[in-house]
Structure formats: C-alpha cells, structure tokens
Image (tube, rainbow, N blue to C red; front, side, top):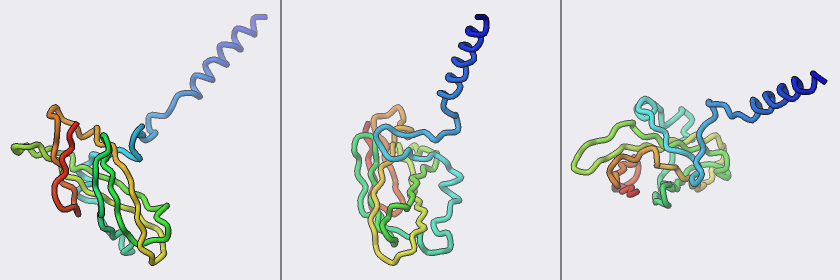
Length: 150
C-alpha cells in the first residue's frame, strides 16, 4: 500500500516535466506568421545572395493588418511553398523628430524552377513598440516609409 503514494508522486512529476515547453522553442505569434527579428549583427552581415542567385526578390506590397506587417514578394521558384522569409530590425531607434527603425527582408529560396512566384508573409511588430504611439519603419527595397501606429 505504501507503493501507491510513491508511484502517484512519480507519475505526477513525470507528467509535469513532459508538459513543460523548452525555453529554446522559438516564440510564435498568435496573429502573424512570424515575429520580426531584432538583431543588428544579422541586419548588417547577413548576405542577400547565397551565391546561387536564387535569393533575389522584389517587394510588391507592404501593409499593416493590426500589429502585423504583411509583405508580398515576387521571386523565382516553383510554388513558393518552401521559400522562407525573415524580417530583421537593425536593433536601434533613430531619434529624429519622429522615431524610426530600419528593417530588411531576407529570403531563403531553394526552389530550382524558373517561374516567377509570389509569396506573402506577415510579421508581428509588437517587439518594435516604443512609448510613443507610432514609429516610422524604413523597409529596404520598399519605396517610402511605413508608419506603424499602435
């Protein structure tokens, strides 16, 4: 009969440990596909081209839907399903009359087809918020500035 409480404690502890998530798991957004990445080193040093020429793209749309920046691109590929996109912030706020942040979009395209495909992805901008109610975003490869109001 003494084995039952010990077994119950071991079972509860085991279930508790299995239900915990790892801290290394990437954060996920409830509203958007991905979070913006704030990393100055990546912003400055990540190459646009991996030497294959497949990572070229054109931004064709950029719009806000709530706290998400939805970016549409055109690039070479087959279906666009395997193309990955990262929106990287420079990790600094330019303190001009209006606060500004610099963003760059990077893609990883391993598709080997010669068709032109479109891909759209949304990025959660809440990590970019300041105490102001809006911030100007300067997105590389996009004409004009984007005003993120929150």
